[in-house]
Length: 237
Image 1: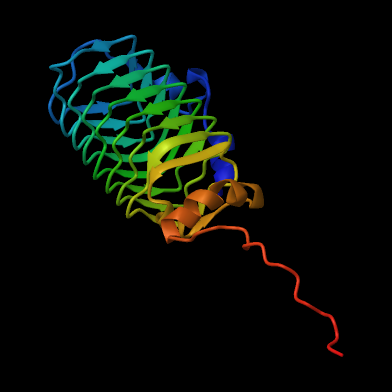
Image 2: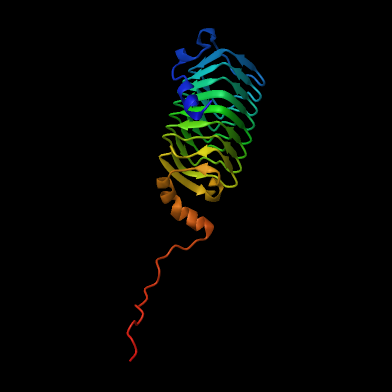
């Protein structure tokens, strides 16, 4: 599936989910290593202190919920869908995401290092100070998103695209990029890691915008030639 096909396939409404008719409401707390198959979490406020490491969500929907300081380390999300949900100060380290989508969600101060994201879509989301260090992102789409102070340090980005998104003060130090397509990004502003853009695809216009930072990273000095007088072309007699 191409990145374009993945964007077209993202359901934007709950009713568009292929398993929408099978969803059962879940109103109770989350449990450590709990199994949540075809459940619908709607309007839940899972405040700090909620611990559900190792929880497994299969064909589940999360709408208009608040995860604040929730411990979901090592959780698994397979064919899950989240909309209008806020993740603040959560721990998702080592979590695994497969065929999952976030629509209109907000992620702030989220620790998601050492995670694995495969065929995951973020649509109209805001990611602020999200730690994705050493995370593997394969065929991930950030569509019409704002990525501010996101840390991709030592992460691997394979087939990742950013159509209509703004990348602001992101960190890419020691990241590895393969088939990463930045051409759709509206802005590309890195706090570090310009040298790690090797393997990315960008436009000519983006190259011109990045040129000063790339030159600085490479230690290049860009200067106009010093003025010299015209040589004396007179013929000696």
